[in-house]
Structures are given as C-alpha cells and as structure tokens.
Length: 291
Image 1 (tube, rainbow, N blue to C red):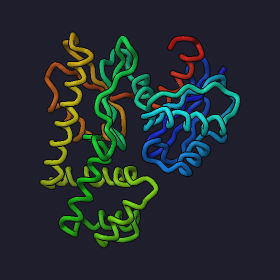
Image 2 (cartoon, one colour):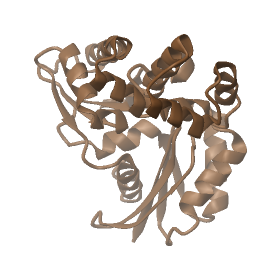
Image 3 (cartoon, rainbow, N blue to C red):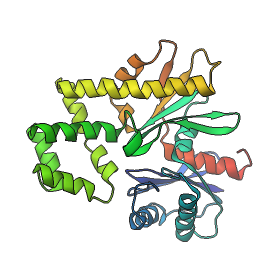
C-alpha cells in the first residue's frame, strides 16, 4: 500500500508517496499553492504538476497553506480530486505536515519559510499561533526578510551589484516604481518577495546595519509568539523542545538570533524530515486509523 502527502505553500507544492514502512517511492514538485494568496489558475497548475506522475495510492493527505475557511477546503478537495480521482482525500493546514515530520519529543514546531507560524498538538488537536500572512503577520519569515531588503533598496535606490543583477533578473528592471509594480502585479507577490531572503542574509553577513536590526526585530517578535503559545497550550512544560522547520532555519544567523531571543530553558533542534514527508505520514496514519 502507498500513501500520498502534499505540502502546498506560498513558494511550491510538493508531493511525496511512501509505502507502509515509510520508505519514499515518489517525489515531485509544482509551483505556488497557498489557498489564500495564489490565484486559482496557478493553484490548478501547481497541484497538477506535482501530482501528474504520482503512482496509485490508497490515501491522500493534502496539507496546504491558506485553508482558512470552508470554501478554501472545498476548493482544495476539488482540485486534488480532479487530478487524482477516486482516492480518499483528507485536508489539513500546512503546519500539520511540519509538525508530523518533527521529532517525537517536540513541544512546539516553528515554521519559517515564505511565511511563519507556531504550532503544536494539544488535547483538542492541532493548535497554532501567528500565521497572519504577509499583511498581518509572518514575523521572521522569508517574506519579512525579503520585504526589509526591498524596502532598503527602494529607500536608498542602490545596493551591491549582485543584488541589482538579481532584481533585474527577477523583475526585469531596477527602476523603483517599476519594481513596485512588478511585485504587486505578480502571480504570487509573497513568494516573490520571499525569494530575496537570501540576499537579505548576505547583507546580515556583510554587517549591514538595517539587516542586523531587522533580524533582531523579527526574531524577537517570533520568539514572543512562541512564548505566548507555550503559555497558552503548554504551561506545565519546564524545558520545551522547539523544532525548527522551513528554509529560513537553514541559515545559522537566523537560528542564533532566534535562540538568543528565547529563555535559556528552551531547547531548539532542526527538523530533519521535509514537511511533505510529514504529510505522507499523516496519510498513512489516517488510513491506519491512527488520527
């Protein structure tokens, strides 16, 4: 038997199939698939691209960003069902996949990729804090850091040659007004802005004051969200284990700044498994009646 997991976010839609033992037998990827911010045509194309070559499976679990209301859930079920008809589909928020991929001793999982969110399991199921999206939240995310960099570029009108080449390559211009226009009219603005996070961290390494200040600001806000989450849902935990999932945590500067903003009693560890494997494990759990 085989089980399909889908991890859909603001940057990419990933798919994985595992067997009963948890061994991976299929991996694929499509474009952006956030049901709050990705246009419908792009959603269809991204999911279809990720699933079109998937082998036959017994259960599907789709973990998508942006499943904030029933209409979005129905849309997700419809798109997945059209791509792979006749297979049971369970839908969960994207953070459930990262949490399932985390070590067993995890108290809280902090995800920082295109967006950011804090999540855990309580006696009532999955619970989350943060995750307000690019307009109302996403502290310490790729979007947040990319936004700081773009703001600095727009403020000064200059930057390292490597950055100017990157902006011209991604946006086709380095003229301020045109840069704004290209970002706001792109198919996935949050993902586009988040794609500049690597350049932001180059500025951190280079010692740019705006970047160092922004990193401290964002990690403090994210750490505060974590502590409020722990206080609300895990108040008896003396030494919480905080798992870090998402592309931002691959950067030592981000990890160090975040850990410095947390109490000394908190322990942090990187999540080794990608969230899409967590989604596939959830599909297997559902099929086996373990969820």
